[in-house]
Image (cartoon, rainbow, N blue to C red; front, side):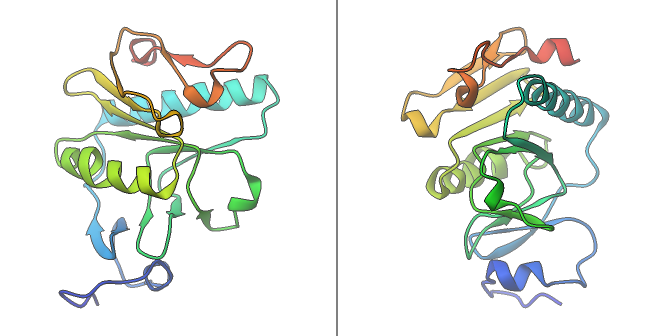
Length: 183
């Protein structure tokens, strides 16, 4: 049972077995996640996951692509379940979760979680060391790209644009994703 007005640690959160549904810990507070995603969300999630996974496999990459509901323990106050994430350091992965910031995180917005992903998680991912963060917005057919590691200006793309993954920009060929092709 959750206590009101109490901050939890990631370790406490990860041992909570009595929570029904999906939850995340953000800034020490337990948040219920959105109800089951809609079909467009799932098509996008699956398609992006496959595109990244196929690229990594084809190029014999060392990174791993994972998807929700996999826990990512960012620090003592934040344990999240990104829709899709890429981890290039195998030492961050144990049997249950990712320990530390993934290299690349992709969240797909739903009407009920837009503010959570575009404000709160944006700040947390930036502070915790995520190298690159994509926010895929199916309602407006936009993708916001935050290349935190490069300390560059954010990019805004449409679903028709080829979007280059910053963590693979120096690879030959680089990984680029056109969201419209997934739909």
